[in-house]
Image 1: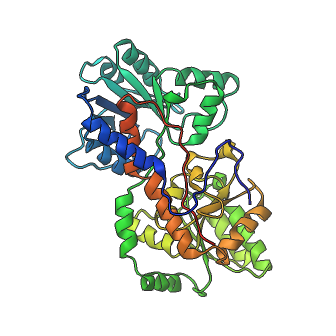
Image 2: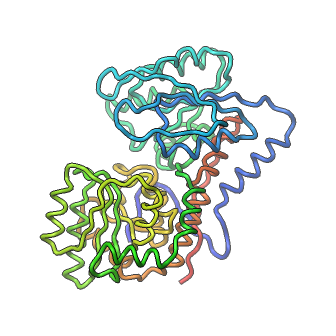
Length: 426
């Protein structure tokens, strides 16, 4: 069983325990409300653009009882066609236009004015080093007495070379950071940063909506879906949702399933997404004798929920991001590679043997090894489902993320807590 070499200790509970961090943040938020009066922070959250998957956390922060959040961003992404978020009337959102300069570099209008404004005492910037307005805005906000946070990935890998020096300088600008994962925090600690400045807030999707959808889906619906998709619906399904590009390495998944087929382990393959490698992947699956169904692009969350729940395991050979949250929210484990230097923060939700597994990066044989027990049903399916859902509810939800951000903007030091998955009985 491969585990990531990242310096993160994932502690497994014994007996009936829950993940403590969400509970502690809840208690501390309640204490903050009951404590002697403090100035209620007036927080400006500046993003280039709020994608559709940010709706739930923005709505959660808009309901905050301890701070006032106002959101600023453009109505489109300057680099892609990703769908934008739509907010309820309770969200204070102001349009802040962006203008692409060159490559990943853009200028965001209005950032300088917000940084100098007396209307806000705290500013959260999306921490992207390529945006000059963020550099200038963070410096001006600090000079005018505001507390400054950077929200983002932080250090996905140790900063080296000239680019590393630039990243280190950039991340020295704020008072504190809101990092998605503990790996970035560990890299910052290795640089000698104070642990009190580095808040790990996780990442999230719309868990409330996903929970409602999950609880509405019947076993018969899933059985009927498998029958419509595959000639042999009794076989387990390996699932992937992704842009079909070379860097996603979906050819590895097909090769791994072909290896397992030669060992007598048969599975269906369900792929949701589109891209330039689709025709090549379809041909590869056909030549390997793998029963594969390519859905194409799908933005219907109800349908995606059914595709995921009909599957035995979700596979992300290249790297995994919010797909891990999406899959586990519906009780389906995730298999991805264990090289922390090329992973995204969300891979930290994968607990080997509990909520998924790791394989050696770029190793088809090891991917087949990691997939085999999940496809054969050697892991207890119901316990796996409960473990996945419990982990998302406890540490990768809008509620957890919202309370972690509130804790930070209220001026509290960061916690040094690890995610503790529930124990799976043999």
